[in-house]
Length: 160
Image (cartoon, rainbow, N blue to C red; front, side, top):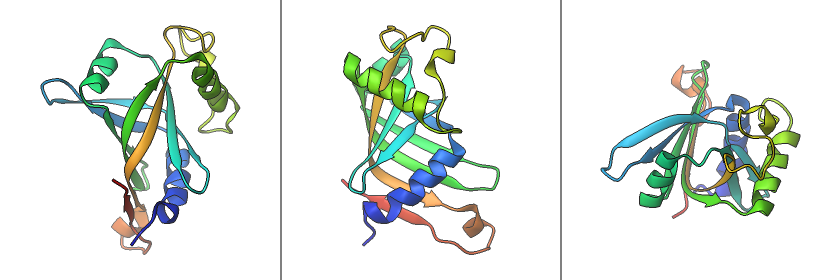
């Protein structure tokens, strides 16, 4: 049986190399909506948690109120792809917003960036900035080498 510890490091490496993910939520009518977001992931050897600094738009809030799940798909021209299916939870408290802001600001490139470069985000206190916590229940890592017949291994984990 594949464990989170078997898959998380490979997922983290690929996700932080690709950086941008297509993120899908579902509206009240069951229709998907996709957008491109910039998650950052933390792995402590036991738990994998993702964070997104994002605007709490009415559409995102309504979708996650209806169904608190998000699907994130990363893809690179090398055909590397990885997926995280997650429970998504808004974190509006200032302590978490400051933590995520600094996590993004202090992470090395290409995953790190200064959130203040986004229009309307001057500091973590700005109403236009929120933190979204991602708790994955399924991960899949599919190296492009597998698709292209050059070896490698597809990794998958589901946790509940």
